[in-house]
Amino acid sequence: KDEPDMKRTVAQVKSSAGGGKISSVSIDQDGIDALASLRRALAMAEASSANATSEAARADDHAVKSKEALEFYEKELKGASERYVYTQKLRDYFRDACAMLHHKMPIVEELEAHYRKFHALRAKALTEAINVEREEAEIEATAATEAVNAVFANGGTHAEATAAAAAAVEDAVFKVKNLQAKNLDEMGRDLNIAMRGAANARSKRRQASLSTAVAEDERQVSLFHKDWTDARQAADAILCDASEEFSTVSAVKKRAEEWKRTHPSSYKNTYMSISAPSLFAPFVRIELIGWSPLYPRQGSSIPTGLDSMKWHGDLFDYGLADGAGADSRDEDGNLLPNIVQHVILPIVSEAVEEWWDPRDATQTRALAASLKDVFVYVDPATNEEAKEVEIAVHRKLKRCAEEDCVVPTYLPVVAQCAPDAKRHAAIRFQTSLDVIRGALELDGVLDRVTLQRIICDVIVAKHIVPYVRLQLVDPSVCAATMRALVDVLPNNWTRTAPQGILPLRDIAQSLQQIASASSNADTTMAADATHVLARLLP
Image: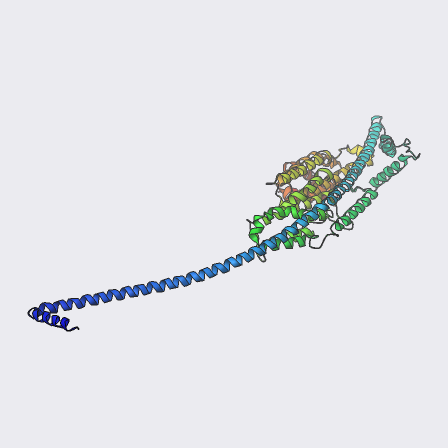
């Protein structure tokens, strides 16, 4: 059935036999076109294959990423569940801890009130003892000098003046303080008998020694230590009924640091760093019942330093990662400064304003150490409360220098006939030296220029120099007094010679001239004068 088509094809070939050259060209072109078409088809097939391979790879990548995302969200979901559970446990823990501390606060506040009370009572007793000692010594000195002046006014002799002074001193205190009359209590007992006995004991102690130490009331001191011991024992027992996980700083610190380490974002978002001082403050307040800025514990010679207390050691490195240093951007670095400012600084402020007596060098040394500990964390230059404490220290020290360091300047002839007056002046001089020693302990609490003005311009120039100048009538005594004074003052102060020190140079040069002019001068006096002059010359 294909024969007709074959015949037509043969006929067509014969009819075109005359144009063979043209047909050959057409066949070649058709071959080229077909080859190009095949190449294009091959290229398209390869491109399609590459696209298919790329899509397959992309699909595999998307599958891997989808799997990873699925695993991530599964992990996040699980982590969120764990965080939720952990957060709930933390909420319950800190809620219970705060509730426990809130429940204990009335007891802590009562102990703190008792703590302030027995500190105030001892401080008041010491101040009263110092005032009574000074008052009675001044009464005796005044009575003696008045008796001597009365004898000399009547043309009496030195022996008569000395006897009159001794007689005037015997009952001078009783007369002035009206202790000779009866003072009966409701039981008919004469209270003035005990007061006369105490006055006599103080007078005998003054006559036996030039010591400025004032004997505190033993009963008051014993009661103070008993109250303090009872308060410490009560403070130690406050948290005894609480669970171990709530009752110590270290236990609460461990929970808080674990929270910060495992969930730092949650720790930060809940402002835990800002709340930490309020959380730990009750523990610090309880332990501070056993600390005093002025008094050591019974059996100890110095008060406890803040850095030796347990709460300080526990919280010193709070919030620091293992082996890491402090980060200035981490609010936890301000934990100790905040606690010191809001818990300890008020105690020190009350001690300065209400308890401290600058005439007691022991108190001043203890207070200076406490203030230096506090000012490590709270700088008066940037903190208003600390600045007010610094101002209070300056104010009380300056008032003491102006009012309590006055050294009587009795005429030499009067002092020679009135030993009680001479002794009174010597004790007041020693008291001024004690105040200077205590004030020097405050170097670093008060700036040095302020201390120099108080010590050199007020105590030395205004009160001591007139007393020393009068002693030139007895060069040996004057030289010993000068030596005692310059040995108290720092070397760099005497050599730079503040204005208040300059008169001492003139007195020392006078002493040296006296020693050089005398052929039988006291060698001790000459040595003292040389030592003083060497300390005072630049």
